[in-house]
Amino acid sequence: MNSKEQLIQQRLQTSIQKCNLHLQRLHYASNQLAGFFPLTVDRYTALSEGTIGSIDQMVFHTKMFYLFKDVWNSHVNYSHTLECK
Image 1 (tube, rainbow, N blue to C red):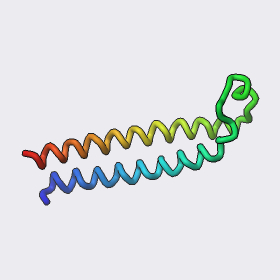
Image 2: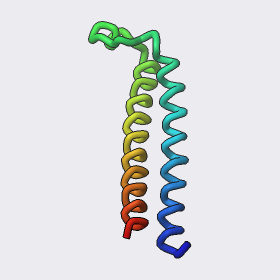
Image 3: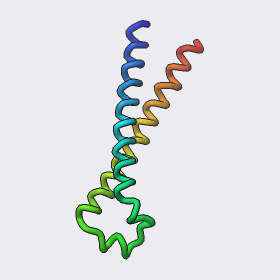
Image 4: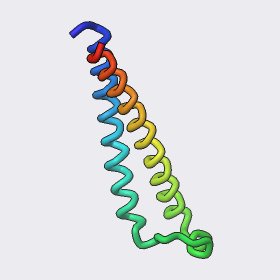
């Protein structure tokens, strides 16, 4: 494996680890907040600051999960392109 392939492999591994971390946190947050959904305006305005913070964290980890998933997919597609050449 050359240095470019090693770098791609390392980036893929890092993306997978970050994706798994955000997925674990997303599952935890969604389990903690399951009783609050479906969320309506009335329910949202009655939530505590702590619960709102948990919802913010769930949204953040959802975005981060999909960001790293997209990075991972782009690396996989790039690696596949290199293999086909």
